[in-house]
Length: 444
Image (cartoon, rainbow, N blue to C red; front, top):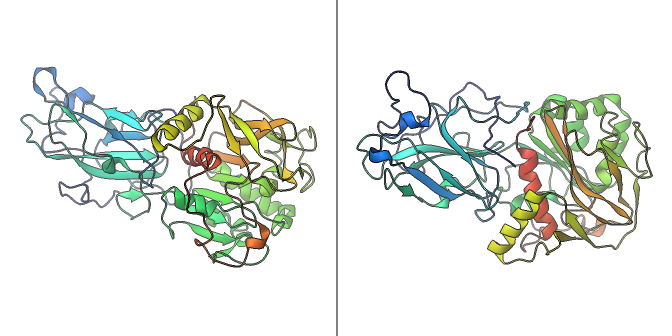
């Protein structure tokens, strides 16, 4: 999460937007009154849209927050679009980071605490107070297009953070979120974390990935998804919860392995926890990027389940390797009052399953990043991501986001088994990384 970024691959179909001055009725044009009128002589750049007197500027300030309306989002793009905002493609795409050139009049990126200052906001000569302008807030395919009122032209304006909140649902018009599939698991519940982030129930599809039958009710079985590359590509992110060996026999099928690799190669994002690691390990081109136990294996995949050797009943104070993540955790801690990260840049991590999967080493660099590491049966990576061919992205976590015992299966359905408490420290880390994997690929 670094800079002002949007996908460069966008469909050509325009959004059907309303034309009112309120935030609930956005419009596709970039102007407010005559604010989109450029200067004479083919003038280009943001200054051509600024008609304030005496060198003054109109500025917007605020904080971009997660769909839950609480947590700040660093690295989000905030911009005034140049002309029509276009729809996202209906499937995954190679969305590399761009500086918004060509599609924005003025843009900025949120700081670690989610705050931003956008200026100079296009302003018409003698613009009346209260006129509005279209502003886009975006992180990957989380995108909100809102008409934001300018109460004080040629001055600073803080209209309220509700205008810059990432969407909790996709309305097919001005509010967009990634298409998400979740493979349910015996021992992990990423679907609950998505709810805590503020994504509405029903806005992601759950596939049966458990040993004892669907709980929650699923749209289909996970094996059917893995056999259908076109359907996989319709999802921007696929979460694979830690589970038993229900569908791992599919990894002996060369077509399924090719589908998984081609999904990510086409721009898909894959999020995998603990025992489901073989969805990474059994892809030959990925095996050298995260080298799972036992020991150094070289370029070839280890046998299925060979890395499930970690001791149970452990808790770890894990070191946050990323300065940006550590700074964000401090900001969230200060805002929420929750204990998240200590003075040594460590977070407390639990929910390690007996015989959890251990990472031995990773090929750091070349798009591979270790986010958390700790002394868990020896010093080792605990959370790792890698970018694949400058197009897709994969995340692996050795621990669970939220513990769920095998005996909890069957009983209460989703979302009744989800905890109602605040996000735990490790869930905070993974919240940050959910937005990271949803974001574009920086090829610099």
